[in-house]
Length: 88
Image (tube, rainbow, N blue to C red; front, side, top):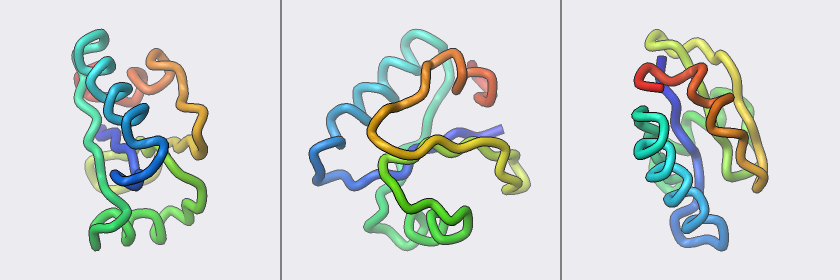
């Protein structure tokens, strides 16, 4: 399973997202991929899963099947995300 966060790197929430990903790796031992919405991959993923509010935490299987997502400035608890993270 894979967890990523879709966000705008030059926004008000960028620092919060980056700190969350770093803390998650330090505390839970799992990695969260940060994907900029300004890249083709990030924009395509947002369209594919119909995500319209950011930042968005996306948990998916290795084959791309969406398992769970959270949208908006209030990030989910790390324990919730760890349940979907390969390393968590």
